Image (tube, rainbow, N blue to C red; front, side):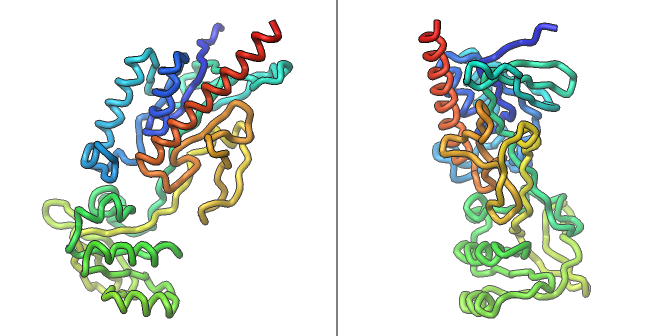
Length: 317
């Protein structure tokens, strides 16, 4: 069966993947973006800290990005990718090219591959929390702190970085409570919190509560005490969607304090020849503009790599 061939296949149509695609299509490359249609920030109504687009819907940004890629001849498809593998021919010394197999069984071929599949957030097992994820319960003070300034903020301890998070949030409100769920807190951290007026709640939590309209209203503790809140911040465990990368043999190493992550160079190049990665799949701290910047750089690097291959081919001919 003949397989459709592309210069670059990009797996993941978020801000990283689309930004890379835009660079590549403007460089006159044949580019296909394959997107599963479930962006990490799709649960959020607005994004913030994005210059020129502050307050926009992240889904609206992606829709405009798809239109921009299509305007230059790029293709964006909604599709789930099952696997990717290197082609066998490496005799030229160049990257071997890749076969990408979709969940439908369709197979596609590309000279280069960019993986921008993001990550998934694993939340603590607190009843009611998942229902408010991305609305009343969030992760980033810089993304959502302004919207709850001077209101009642709760911070759930989920790891060592929670102490930093609660101190950051004190910048936005004088009413901040740190819920430790019985976990020990270092004496120096306790002293620093109390010095800034942060309340420390050591009792075990039981559930997140909601008002009659379904909005987050606070936390109920295990002893029945209800603590009224307007917002909850926490640090979920980030799990990279890197199965394609590791399946291709990309090297991983402990990073970010959250297990092993695929390593990349400053342009997003992985240890696998011809494979790049960008965005949250390799950087859990990448916000929309950071992910877009990483995609921009990766797209330019991939095009440069293709040019070098074409120079070698021309000289050999």
